[in-house]
Length: 434
Ligand SMILES: [Zn+2]
Picture: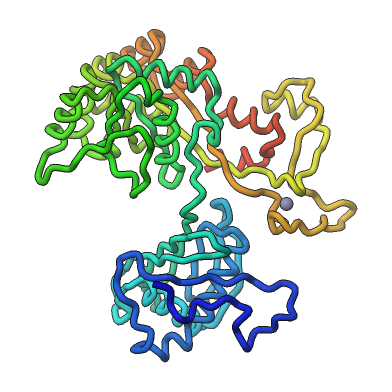
């Protein structure tokens, strides 16, 4: 259903079409939860909030925002745009307008506009420049009055999930293929919240040869499907262990399960890992810590015997290739960060020259970065690492051993991207400061 108000900007009488910098406008197409949106019954709200909401979202999308936050503070509300995960202060608006925008978006998302005391979550199906976007809407009541609005636009077409997109080294891809073809063992993918863990699991799954091995998924990837992977049917009331046993009986070589948040599930997975290879997500800040967490929960013997690999990812911003600036790094810097001394050129966002600001960049909006990629850390549980696990070694020792064995680490992978001119040293520092 396309609402009658989903006109393009050209049709708006009050819009100055002579403007060169015309912002292409977003079309709201309906609530994700399927609720009918009655604009007639809410005509006053629509009049107060519809145009403002369209302007806010269209402007944010034009700037490639992946999150928009509106915080009312007294009589004004501040708008913060997050581009590639980094916050940029946006405009300010009177709190009355912020209220109208928030209520309008709640209405469009099929949420309850009368309720302003409870947090609400929903989404709107939209179209922006002929690209489908889902706008995920969160509202949270504030102690000081009013509600905070968070909007997360999700491009439904672009998905970063192939091993190539993510920068898996050829060696890593080969190792994943080998480890997942043994018909046993656990491969875990971990990372902090919002680090793209699910994207990383997709890339791991795609590294497996789906023509040679039968892959079963017991996980729901938010409606996204992967070719050549059988989605196991859900049986009402079936427990996780029974579900997994059923997948194993159907001759699965690899089974993908839902993220392992509970200890019970973790135990089931490690129990069954003698009969099938299991791939899952696990919440841990990095791969080394994941191994030591597991050892605390399951014991050193089970972990060293059945865990085969842990991967972790952090997202870093890519330099904008329209405006990135080459510079000659000094030898001391190269030595300090561990880049080869013969490195002749590195890149960074454009810097002011003699106090003059660099020229505006139409592509990245003069941020200097455009898009993100993952830097990946992998720890394969080799014999020396098994020994470390059994001897009670800490996460750092395990990580260092992995690096000595030539496995991809955050540092090596990040520096590779710097050396290739895809990101800057400053961005690596920023991403790893947290
Ligand atoms: Zn640029």
